[in-house]
Amino acid sequence: MRILADYRPALRERTGVGEYLHHLVATYAKAHAGEVTLFSSSWKDRPRPGLAAELGVEVVDRRIPVQVLNLLWHRAGWPPVESLAGDFDVVHAFHPLLIPARRAAQVVTIHDLFFLNHPESTSAEIRRDYPRLASHHARCADAIITPSHHVKRLVSERLDVPADRIYVCSPGAPSWRTLGHAPNVPLDGYLLFVGTLEPRKNLGALLDAYTVLLRMRTNVPKLVIAGRSTPEAARWLAQIAAPPLAGHVELLGYVAESERERLFAGARALILPSLDEGFGLPVLEAMSAGVPVVVSNRGALPEVVGTGGMIVDPAQPDDIAAALVPLIDDADVAMRWAAAGLERARAFNWDAAAATLRRAYTEAVARHAA
Image 1 (tube, rainbow, N blue to C red):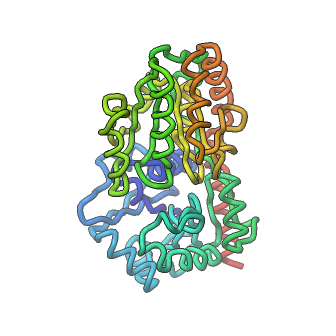
Image 2: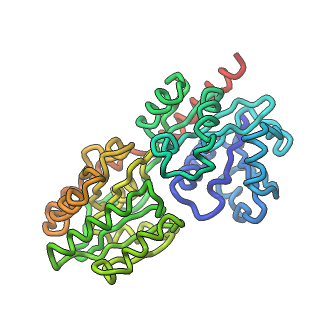
């Protein structure tokens, strides 16, 4: 098969979607040599030199602004991607909206349905017609990829898509050295949050929980926040700069994949109190590093964590704080949760995801030809 994968979400600093796309495509291309071409379009961002050779793929790069091409594709259904990249059997968009194609089977990835579940936390542009477009495109797609069974269920129910057209390709655990070793939680480690500073991540609840800890005790580890900021983060940044948080919280900004193993190695616990997650890649990374995790009971997080982490109500800062106390105070408790997370992380691997993706592509081509 000839596969065209839209690589644009991975061109810049890779967050969860970009990491997922990069590693899934890399694993698939390794198993199916010569099949994959990456598509890139941007006015200023180029695929990094050596990417094609590293992954064993071809790259088609067009100097067209992303916003312009997306506007044409998603509003006008033009131009067909064949006019930009040539002929393919499958065209895969790693977002909910189809890439127009004359003949190719069309596959989309839906990472979550936050835009439907929490419209109040999205932009006016998204609220205007994105839900309608995503619903229509999902029903037209020959196959849909989701990162979790939670999202598969939502897509089937909310977007009215037959379940047999939806394929779960969960991310794989990173190949860090800790996966093959017993956990070693640092006694002087920091509390860690990893994620874009946006409303869905519920950073405000974590800051409130951390404030509770500071007011009830003196031996509270530093809180380290790693992730790209957004305009919506202004209120949290102001809260961090003021008492009682001032001096207790460290903002790292975006941390590249190559630096994240070291980041997790110094953590006492990861906290992700998100209001909605289609998967929650930092949680899998933390478990892979032998770091205890505390996550919300929303979205796909309970599915990802299983029995490998602590689950809390993200609307209750006191509950988040209470979950952290034993991880801070008792090294044995922290080690038990770290071991449970490591065991859970071993259930996720990219080879299984790539095998499911292969089946999705094969069945999408057959479905499209029928």
